[in-house]
Image 1 (tube, rainbow, N blue to C red):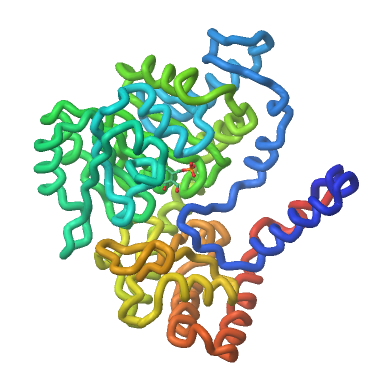
Image 2 (image 1 turned 90 degrees about the horizontal axis):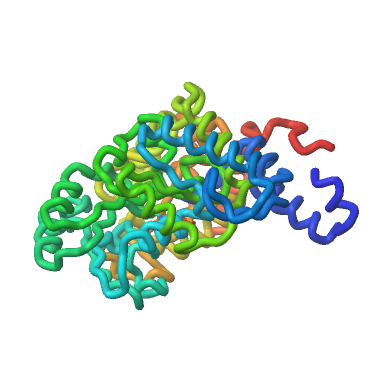
Length: 418
Ligand SMILES: Cc1ncc(COP(=O)(O)O)c(C=O)c1O
C-alpha cells in the first residue's frame, strides 16, 4: 500500500495503516459512511489531479481541456441516464457545496427559505443558525408530527402559505421514512416557490429504484456522492433543463473554483456501476437489513422513531433503556461498533448528549453482513445498552464483534499488496 509514501513519510504512512486497521476491525454504522470500491480509490488518486480547469465542456478558461471535456461529458451523460434527469452538474465538491450551488443560482440575500428542522431530520445547510448562510437568507423550518414522527405535511403547507418562501427544501440527515415529494412539489407550485430535494443520504437507493425518485417532482435535486451512493467525497446537482444555465453559473463561478477531475472520474465510474444488478441487489439488502435491525432492537425494548425505516438508517429513542446517546455511542465505540448520538424529534436532551442514536446499514451490508449477522449486532447493542459500564460485559461484546467482523473483510485479501 502507498509504496512511495511508505518510504518518504513513514510517520504519515503509519496513520493510513492505522486507519485501515480501524476500519477493518470495526462494525461501521455511521449512516453517512460507505466503503468505496477500489476503482474509486484508484481514480481518486489519478493523474487528473494535475489539471486545473474551470468552466464547462467546450467553454473552458484554460487550455489543454480536450481529455477533461470527454471525461465531464461522459460523467454527465451517465448520470442523466442513471437518474433520468434533464441536466446534471457534477462539479460540486460535496453535498454541502451542491446546496450552495443551488442557493447561488436562485436566491438573493434576504430571500425566505423553508427547510426541515435540523433536530427533526434536516441538515445544517438547510437553515441552521450555525451555518453562515443563516446570516444571508431568512430560513424558516418545518418539522414532524409529534404522534407519527413523520413530516407534518398539513403544517408545512400552512406555513408555506403564510411565509411564501422562494425555496422549499426536502430531504435530510436523519429522516428514516419516505418523503411525499409530489405533495411538497404541489405546495411549492401553489406558493410560487422553487422545490429542492437534498437526497444526499438516499441517492444510491434512488439510483437503484429501491425507493421513489424525487427527480420528476423537484426543480433541483442535490446529493453527496458518498453515503448510499458509495462513491468518492463529492457532490452533484440534478435539475430540469430550464434551470440548467442558472445552476451551472451558480456552481461556477457562483460558489466554487476549479473542479476536482479526479473525483469527477470516480463519479463517472460510479454512475456506470450503479446501473448494474449487483448494485441494485446491494441497495435492496441495505433496506432489508435496516428494517430487520429496527425490528430486533424494538424487541429488546428500544423505541424506533416513527416505528420503522424505509431507507438505510434507523433512529433509535434510547429513553426506554435509560441511556443517553452520548453514553451509548462511547460504550459501543469501546467495543468496536461505530454509531453516532443524534437528537430525536422533540428531544429534551442537548445535541451533545441526546436521547437518541442514528444507525446506518450501508457499510456492513457492503461487507456482506445479512440477516443472521444483523440479529447478532442487535443483541450486542442490547447487551451494551443494558450494562454500558460493566467491563466484563464490554470485553465479551468486543470479542463477539471481532469474531463477527473477521469473516467479512473490508476489501478482498491482497487488495493493498504492492
Ligand atoms: C442531507 C444532507 N445534505 C448535505 C450533506 C453534506 O454532505 P457533504 O458532507 O458531502 O458535504 C449531508 C451530510 O451528512 C446531508 O446529510
